[in-house]
Length: 100
Image 1: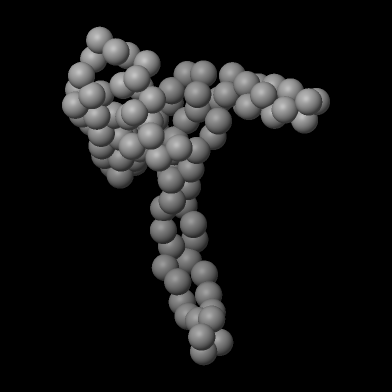
Image 2: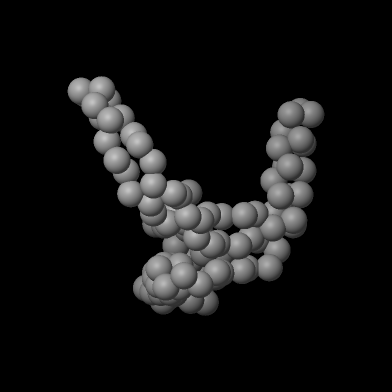
């Protein structure tokens, strides 16, 4: 699901809200989440999961074109850990689809 599809689904499910209001709400939510992660904060949405940063240490990589070794710096990457309710729901839906 893309951001546009999410906005459309929410707008269709909430007929009393204007499409532009839903679009603004989704974009604002994502912007605030991005800002929080960028400043090193952890985001927890109960029942859904948590977002945090994981450190990737520096390493030696390889240029695929030349085969030459390249030093890659350490970096932080976003990490998502699904919550228990989300894991159970996904697993339940997946198992039901396999049973059909």
